[in-house]
Length: 319
Image 1 (cartoon, rainbow, N blue to C red):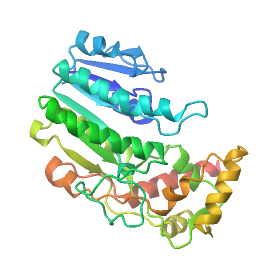
Image 2 (image 1 turned 120 degrees about the horizontal axis):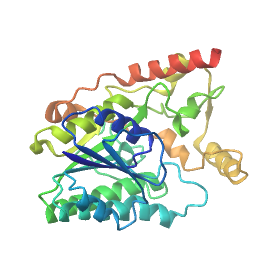
Image 3 (image 1 turned 135 degrees about the vertical axis):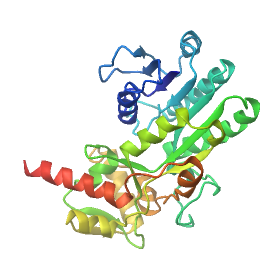
């Protein structure tokens, strides 16, 4: 089997390729990214390439790709990247890659979507199931783009039914060494809480994500579908504070939104006013379908993943 992985130098892409390189059922891994991170074995052929580049079609054809794992996405956009450019990378490039894959008779198209595609709303049920509507907030580019990507993929699945889609709506990915905007919230001296909100967090172990992606390459094709990918359960901000032994300072949504807007403009905070919704109404994912239909039971619950993360980082802070 020949595999194409986009976003190959990213956090999950790197972990996935490390695992796939050990898989004897895979002949060739084609890795694509705009930067090269890790060193690869001879099994992996790396292309320094923007996913918007139409040359990716030749890469798919030349290597006779059987399955595409599309991980490339803009999570934390740099300041110089416009909203239009983010849309081109997230949405237009994804549609283009799927079409190239389908025309080249690729059998499986595997993509990581996000729980963010459901949007951040006070009336979101807890937990959310795959049949609940996608309402990704337009003011939050990542959330909105995931929603639009899935809408387009649904239409394309009817046009190209021979290329089966595995879509994983992933919750917050966490491992011992994970470092991003979300984990930086937990590393501050105190936690930020929103008055009137429990700010639930559901987590998924990074290795569970990698395991699911690998499984989707070899499972029965009839299992191609949309799945919430998350560990069991969730943690409230109060439970997180107890684990970390930290205080919570609660703000009104209005005050926090105003404060973040000012601080972000002054470049004193990486967070913007949109992050208030992100903290208030975080989607909690139901993983029943993942376990029953796809046949994968996450090795760690949300709480277990967070406990591992907290333990590792507390030890590191003492060194």
